[in-house]
Amino acid sequence: MYKRVLQPIVFVLLMAVVYGCNQKTQTSLPSPLQNDSASVTVNEQEDAQKDGKLTYKQVEQSKKDKSGEYKIVVDFPTSGNPILVNAIREYISESLGISYAGEMENNMQGSYSGDLGDGQKMIDYYFDLKYKEFKNAHDEMAEHMQGDVPTYASETEIHYLYETDKFVTYEMKKYEDMGGAHGGTFISGMTFRKSDGRRVEWDLFTKSMQDVIKKGLKKYFEVNTDEELENSLSLENTYLLPLPATPPVFTKEGVLFTYQQYEIAAYAAGLPSFIVPYNEAKSLMNTTGNNLLP
Image (cartoon, rainbow, N blue to C red):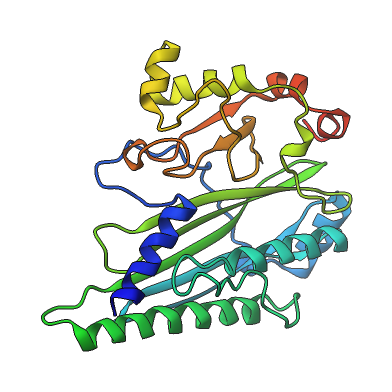
């Protein structure tokens, strides 16, 4: 039983997503656009395709029982450039398969092998995996624990966030709690080039970003000097600040940098984040990156 309980804790720490008590207010990805996407009509899809826009519908699955509460909500692409649509669907599958609990080798990333066009079937597949995993862990704990057994929770949302004529951005928010002192939160996103579905990664940034990162982190931590910033971080070496483990996210306001908890600072710091306006980001990127910017 102890092995089963400790493994999720270790895994959460390794993924740097522990959500601490009394943490700094998080700067998360901007809220997803509100959209009655579940009722996208054929005419709307045809109009969107003419405009080069992506259309999507919301698919979800949820359950609540004595073991806890579980939910997955996804803005699933329905039409647009077929290459782009397929790339986003693959991203959704891979993202839903990321596991923060159970045996560490049991990462189910992208394990769905059914029809990528069937959003509900994909959601149901990953939901069933997560529900069974958490319910089995809860039931195992109940067998060996006296008194009330903590309830578990797993909630994942993947939403359409922003779009231009050149790219589409999705965001992912994940929260899981296996009855510990606090749960684990992970926030990320992905930007896709509309022409071919290419995922935007840090390789598009070819210039040194040390000054930009330092400036952004000083703003986040509300400090002015290098020494104050160093005291806010948990890094041994602040002379070379690392890029976030999660990719850059192209938002309406600019390029979003997001560090997960424990990645560069204590959990109480939240998820250190900042936005670099596009007029500043252009000087940091290669031609491929600049061609994507608004």
